[in-house]
Image (cartoon, rainbow, N blue to C red):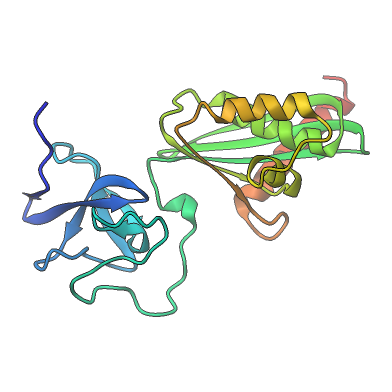
Length: 230
């Protein structure tokens, strides 16, 4: 297989091989070889022989020799955005990532419970709203995460999964020891290990995040199915 070029020109635009969130990509650069930043965004592509292009956050672009995951961008010329520019939603930065929002709902604890999931990839969306019968709120939150991961077939793609549950965050991110629901937690941990690039992120609930509010409604819709015995 021929080696990928370190730089190329297409349509009068220069492209240089750099890193985006740890992955090697091609970035549109200026005459000095620095990322061509516009409104805190740069153009990237994944293959030199593929005409598809994407936007990415300039703050996530690094030189190939910069292995620091959260370090600053190295530029040989001033091309950074103005100070105070808003930080974009990380779910919008990697357009080839699968974004998943999850939520669980429970009426009483335990009580009738439901789950809500929103999956988004390359502009396409899928919703999941299901009854899980009688359960606690924590089980509903875990079941929503499990349903999201089970629904993703291509586990080589990067996945950003969002939850507003501190319980889920503690068990799956902070390494808490499960005192209850151990079988379910172990199943989810085993499932998570099947993904090559999975990040589980916490988002504040009922704080104006549209996708979080959306899965909350889906979970409550699933809860309603439990009440109706469907």
